[in-house]
Structures are given as C-alpha cells and as structure tokens.
Image 1: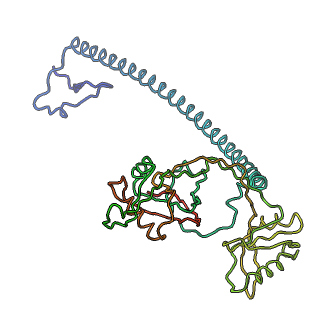
Image 2: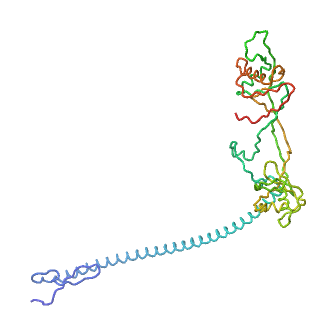
Image 3: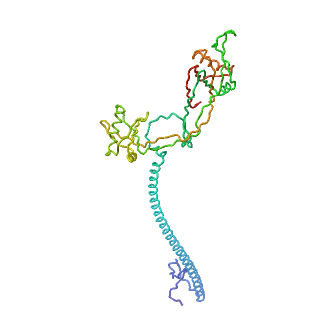
Length: 384
C-alpha cells in the first residue's frame, strides 16, 4: 500500500533547515522509501544540537566583539579628550608667547630710547666717544694690518730727532752683529790714505771712538681730550678758488646770523693742512644745536653747499714716560779731527768700516758732521 504524499528531504544549514525537492537533488528514478521514524528523530535531534552549539558560539563571539567595540570606543573618547586638552594647552602657550613677544618688543623700544639718551649724554661728557663724529678726511693706507685685539691700542710711529755735534758721524750697518762688533772694539784707527799705497812714514792715521746709540721712546702716554663748548669744526668745504680770508669772511657772515642757527663769531681760523675751519662763538649754547644738526647748507658764491658740522676737541699730554731704547744697527763715531774735507772724510770712514778685516761690514748709511758744525739725525721705525 503506497502513501501518495511527497517525502521532503532536509539539508543542513547553520541557521535554518531548507526543504528540497527530490528533483532539485537531481533525483532520477523511483522515489526512495521514507526512513524509519526513530532514525529521523535522532537526525533531527543531532541537527538541533549542532544548531544550538553554533548559536551559542555566535552569541559568544558577538559578546566579545561588543566588548572590543566598547573598549575601542572608550579609548577613542579618551584620545579625543587628550587631544582637546593638548590643543587648549597649545593655544594657551601661543597666547602667552604672543603676550611675551609684545612685552619684549616694548622693553626693546624702552631700552633703545635709554641707549640713545645715554649715548648722547656720554657724547657730551666723554670726548673720546665723539671721535666718530669728527670731520672725515680722505687717507691712503700704507701701513700693516694689526691684530683684532690691538684695535683699541694707540699705535705710535717713532720719529726721533738725534743731535749730532761736530767731529762725529753716525754709521748704520746692514747687520746688527756688525754694529755690535764695532761697539765692542770701542777705539778704531782709521787710515786717511784713501786706499793709496804709501810708505809707512807717509801714512796718516786718526783714532775715533765707537759707541752705541740710545734714544728715548715713550713707554706710557696719556692724552686728555677736552671738548669746546663754543667752537665747531666746519668741513667738506668746496674749492671755490678764492682766498682763504674771503672764504672765512663768508662763513663768519653766514654763521653769525641767528636765522641760520648761529650767533656772534668770536674767532675763525683754518686748521693746518686739513681744509677745515674752526669757528668760535662769543656765547654758550650756539655750538651744541649746530653740532646736533650735523650738516648745514651754506650759500657760498653762486651755489649752496652741504657742509659738515663737528665738535671741536683739543688734546693735551697728561702723562708721558720715556725709556731708553738702543738702535741695534747704528754706531756713533766721535773724536774725528778736521783733517779732510767733508766728502773725503765720509768716503774714508765708509771704506774703513766696510772692511771685514777691521771687523766691519756692509754700510747702509753714513752721516758725518765736521768740527764747528751741528746737525740733527732723524730716526724712524726700522722696517727691516
């Protein structure tokens, strides 16, 4: 006896059971006999147990993922809060930095004003600080470059005048050791034959004494500078081709007028070899405003010229200490009799002290002063 109802086959699924028709499984042939009831029940129970385990695993994983999401969300909120705090801190630092910058800028302005006031006050009190404001003068540098640490030192170029009495001579040798040897011998016998071969009895000789040359050089020099309260220096004067007196008259006329900032001129004079004029006013209070201006346009002849106004500073030696210094290549000869003319005696002395057999050497310069006369020898710095 056949049951005409259709049998339904079940396939496994993680979520649900889907009925499938035999035709979908590619069923061919006669329909199979249905399984027994007990076996079908066990199969369904197994399927149910597997589905329950899958569901529990899915729920466990869902809880884990939910916890992870909550933890990530919490961390994200903490990071956002930290970033907001950092941003607020940075904005506060920027605001404080701007305020500090403004404060420093104001302090800088105040310090600049104080510095300018102090500089003007020092210029009025210390004439040394006024040197940059003195008139400019074109110069040609012919010296040596000094070290940076020597820039604040006063460098002196010696120009020593040494008196020479009659019957003496100065000999400058090329080498210092030759001069030292001549000085150590003290007395020298000089033949006046001028190199001629004469008999012993016909030869004429003179004895001269050799001594070192010591000159006095400054070891300490202090100069006191004084700024005049009534005088100014006028420089950058044009070349107008007019006499100096006429130019002084024009300058005096201009600076004596109060509308030009001047006053009554007491004296005027040209500085030696400088092309600059010193004007002295009769009253105080006239020179300072002109010096503060620095420049002034003056009508001279048919044109206007921009002249520079500078303070007038005078210097006096406040302290001078000297110490002896020996000229290493120079020898003083004394006791020379007046037996030959000036030129022959100079030639004779030079020939004698050039001979190495007499302890001499190459002579660079020889100056001879006959008896009855006087001369002055000028010593400069030894560049050798």
